[in-house]
Each structure stands twice: as structure tokens, then as C-alpha cells.
Length: 354
Ligand code: FA5
Image 1 (cartoon, rainbow, N blue to C red):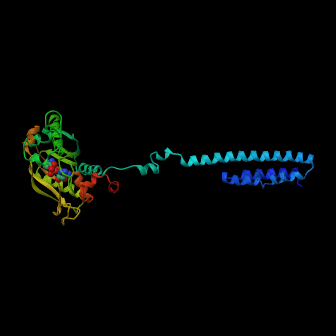
Image 2 (image 1 turned 60 degrees about the horizontal axis):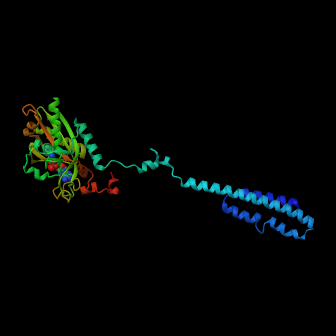
Image 3 (image 1 turned 90 degrees about the horizontal axis):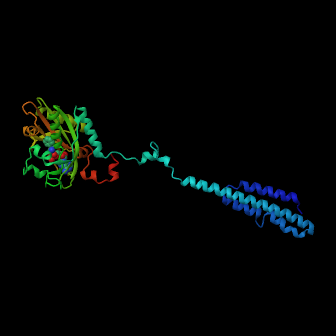
């Protein structure tokens, strides 16, 4: 028969096993070992019956106290493990906002970038600034005078047909409109320069334009142009042609050629269309260039004296050239995008490529 020392040894052994249990699961196993039906303490309780009454009473009290100590240790350890495990769970599921502070990998992954059209506009501005041009802007909502009248396109002029647009209902019918091209910014610049005595002008004017055009591989109803205007003394068509040539080589590289073809614009005389080799087929003909091998980027010409008269520039002292071409078209040709509509479809897989 074992004595009190065995009971103390059992309690010590239980204390050690309970402290070593690293999880609630492990503690459940330890509980069975130290206080279950087959535990040494339970075994000792079963042996009490063989003792004399007095010895049985004393040993019974002793065993009861030992079992109370073990139960207490088990409860204490169970509570500590529950706390540790819950803390670990919370730490794992916590939303750590510091991950999204600037500079962290998560914040970098979530950040977008400029749309291809904005990137193209910036690059075009850079090329022209490098050539000595200033950058100016004008309003997208215009009056009939700026979009048409001052540009030598009087009411009922046939040229208005190809520049039909969206009109705003602001009282007088068909007087306020969404601009169909960036050419009205020429008028604003010249008017201001005349008032301020600030001629000559060497400026490019990028911006959004609107037309009643049906979307197709080369057209969008909302698109972007960059206008160019030079007003100075002794400017000739050779200056215009040279500017277009330098720009084409700088922006598209030496493999892409530009050509000027006679055209008509009411606000330039003579006028030309500015075309470049189609970058998709390299001139052999494809769906995007309608099998011609060339893509029209824009129009250009010498500023018509009627436009100078409308803004008060003395056409005897000053001459100038102007051009206007599509920013979306430039992006299309630079990156060989078969269909311009891809630029506005918002397919992230397409946009991520640029
Ligand atoms: C004009 O808009 C004239 N203002 C250009 C100009 C300026 C001529 C200065 C002379 C002097 P046009 O309608 O051809 O011209 O348009 C010029 C360019 O804008 C086109 O060649 C094309 O690149 C782009 N463009 C025109 N319409 C659209 C459209 N719906 N979608 C995308 N790009 C377009």
C-alpha cells in the first residue's frame, strides 16, 4: 500500500504534465491521465476500502485534497491555453491597416496608372515642348462662334456636316455645343495674344473633343486631339512640313514615314492631310487602315487670312500654320492597336499592358 509521499509524487507528476500541455487538445489527454478513472489518484481511491477506518479517513482526506489541487491546476491551465489560442486567432485574422501605407508591397499592388491616352498626351506634350512649343488649354463647351464662326465656317457651311456634335439646351437653340475639335483654342489664344500684345505664338493645345461619329476601328464619339499653332513673321509651308517631319521621327521613330496630301479645311489655306505609314501592316494594307497602308493622323495648313481677320491679327505682318491630330490615333499607331474602341472598353487586361 502506498503512503502520503506517493500522493505528493502523483500531484507533482500531474503538475509537470499539466504545465507541459501546449494546447487544449493536449490538455484533454493530460486530464484523462491525471484525473480520469485510470489515473494513479483514482487507483489509490479504489484501494481505500482495504484500510482500517481511521487510516481510511486520513488517507481519504489526503487524496481528496490532492484531487482538488490537480483539478485546480487543470482549470488554470485550460483557461491560460484558451486565452493563448484566442489571441493567436485574433492576430491571424486582424485587418492590419499599416499594410496599406504608401510604400508597402500591398499598397503598390493596389495602385493603378495613367490611362494610355493620358500617357500619350503627356508624351506628345514632351515632344512638342522639346521642339520649343508652349502648352495651352481651352474649354470643352464652346459657342458656335469659337467652334465654327471664327474658323471661317459660317452657318449652313457644308463643313459643319462632318463636324456635327452635341448641343446644350441653354436657351438660344444650337449656340452652345461640345467642341468638335481643338481648333477653337487657336481662336482663344490669338484673341488673348492680340489683347496682350503677346504675338508671336508657338503653342500646342491638347484636349477632349466630341462628334456625332459612329464608333469603329478608327473613330470614337469622344476622343482627343492636340492642336498646334505658330503665328510669327515669315512663317511658310516649309516650316509646317518640317515640323510634321521632325515630330513624326521623334514620336514614331525613323521607320515610320509621314506624307502630306492636299485637303480642304475652311480655316487653313492651303490645307493638307497628315498621314503616316500604318504601323499595323507597315504599309501593305489591313483592316485598320482600310487596305490603304496609310493612316490619317490629322489636318494642317497655313492659317487662313479670314481667321486672322476674325481675331484681329494683321495678316500683312504675320503668317502662321496650324495642325490638329488625334491623340487616340497616335496611341493606336504607336502601340499597334487594331481597334480604337479597346481604349474605352475598360478591360483591365488590355489597359495593364501599357
Ligand atoms: C480637324 O478636326 C481639324 N480641326 C484639324 C486641323 C487643325 C486642320 C488645324 C487644319 C488646321 P479632322 O476632322 O480631320 O480635322 O480631325 C483631325 C484628326 O482627329 C483625325 O485625323 C483623327 O486623327 C482625329 N479624329 C477625328 N475624328 C475622330 C474620331 N471620331 N475618333 C478618333 N479620332 C478622331
